[in-house]
Length: 294
Image (cartoon, rainbow, N blue to C red; front, top):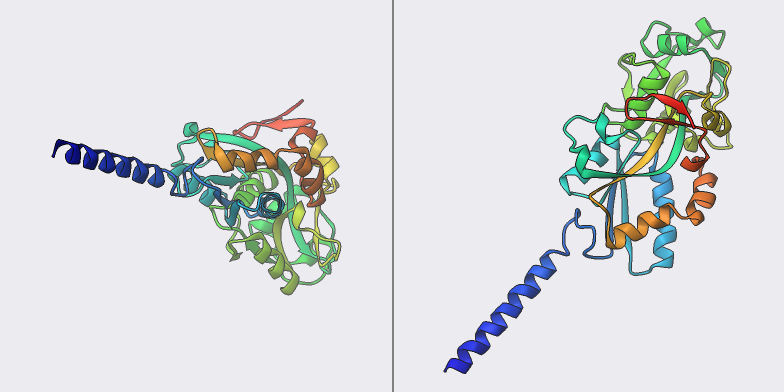
C-alpha cells in the first residue's frame, strides 16, 4: 500500500512540474519560451521589421515572427503590459505617459528621417518651417499662398498615439498643435490619401517615398529631405527606431533582435528600404530632444 501511495505522489509531482513548464512557455510577453515572437508598434518601422522577419523565418523555419503596426503608443503599451514581446517605437519610452520605461530595454535598430508629404502636382517642392507650421495650424489654407497651384489644402494627420506624429510635431512644427483634418492610423493610408485627394499634405518617413513620384517629400528651409542631411544633422525631422523589450530578451526574441542588428540587415535590407543605420549618425538625440554632435 505504501508503495502505491508513493508512486501516485511521484506521478502527481511530475504532472504538476510538466504543466507549470508548459504554462511558462505561453503568452506574448514571455521572452524565452517558444519560437513565436509577437511584435507591434510603429508603422514607420513596420516595413523594415516585416522584411527582416521574412528573411529570419526563411533561415529559421521553426520561427514564427508576427509583426503588426498600430503606432508607437500601442507598441509601448503592449510591450509594457506583456501582451507582445517587442514594442516598436519612433519615440523614447520616457516620452509616453503611463509607461514603466525603467523596466524596458531599448534596442536602437535604425534612424528614420520624416518630412511633409504632398502630391507631386501642387506646384511646390520646398517650404519654410514657418510656413509649414502655418499650413498645419490652418493659417495657410491654399497652395497659391505659397506660390503653388490654386488648390485648397487638406490636412491628413496620424492619431495622438503615433510616434511619427510626435516626431513631426516636435521637430517639424516646433511643438505646434495641428489643426483638425483627416486622421489615419497608418502611414500606408496617409500615402494613399495623398495620392488620391488633390491638395493634401501629410507626413511620412523617408522609407514611404518611392520612385514613382506620386507622393513627394518637401524640402524644409532649402534643406532636402535626404539621408545625408539627416546624418549630418542639417535636416531637423528624424527619430530613432526603437525596439523595446520588457527586460533583457532571451530565446527567439533575442535571436531575432540580434538578426535585426546584424550586418545582413544593417548593411542590406535596412539601407535598401530607406532607413539609416544608427551607427552612421554624426549627431545624436536624447529623450528630451536635445541634439549634440558625435
